[in-house]
Image 1 (cartoon, rainbow, N blue to C red):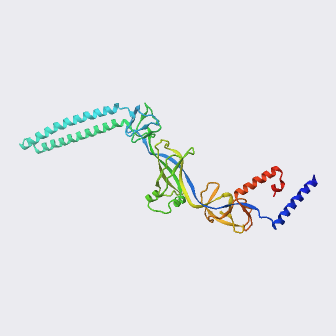
Image 2: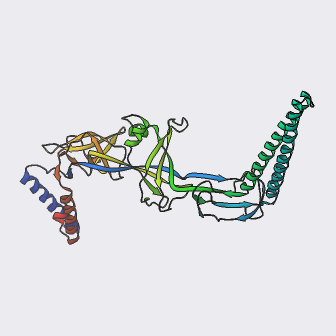
Image 3: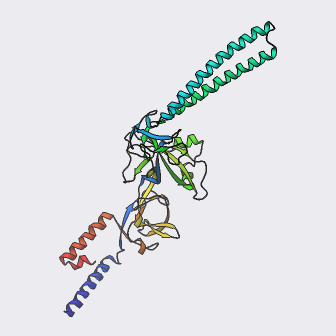
Length: 391
């Protein structure tokens, strides 16, 4: 057995020497190489966002009392002016009746005083009533008019309070949580609102980006309206990872950088015709980022030295040159988008780059040829063809 292994080794050495003798020198190792091409990259930037209704209004009572009727339930769609709650109206109706009676009394007193004053004026002309008595009557008339105005103001206030017993929605929207039910005592000073009506016909997505990211996006400058007009339409990724069907627009950019986070707040608006979005939900605002005339190289084809990236470019004599490249900050996890250092048509080694040295000679082959040779070697090894499997 030992003699057979020695004989096998000798045969392999002889084959190797014959191969070298035929070529005159050892063949340079084969490496898979690709020819670079300029392309357009469709990348995206994603920013965590909080979604809120266009208008979230807290519903609070203007008067105190017990809730006697609940006209809606949580999650109901309501229109502007629709009654949501009714507060006990008994005392407020009584107040209106009392105020109405006070107005009638004031009107009667005013009419009586007007007659008295008119009579005093006539008697004063005849010298029967002194000027002092006439002035007193005139003052009493003014007091009667003021009393009527006061009574009418109290009636208006009483009627308004009676109207406030019907708590209405200030806008179209969807009713939120209702912590107070029939029989609950409510007042204008309570801490918790009766409910919240969210206008969700359009939704706002609030998000932040860093100062550097904002600068890259608006580097050309201009007025705020011009900057917003230049920004692309954005998409919204929902919490389950799906994309919201309608695109949105960035409407506002804060003019102040947060000194603690170095970020700027932004707001995008999305239509909600399908009623999919809800206030206080979360998601990600996605900005499209289109890169033109960039070169795509696999990340496995690069090496990194002191935060700089390099690739091996095959020269005309089949030697490799270690070439520095600059890549875009975003990538797809498998490839880099080269913005400088390469030009279309350059041949780049895409495998085994950690073992290569600058100026080393190689035999460039295509990735398809490399794959075919690998499969053939596996087949030869399986079939026991040692000569081709181990060369």
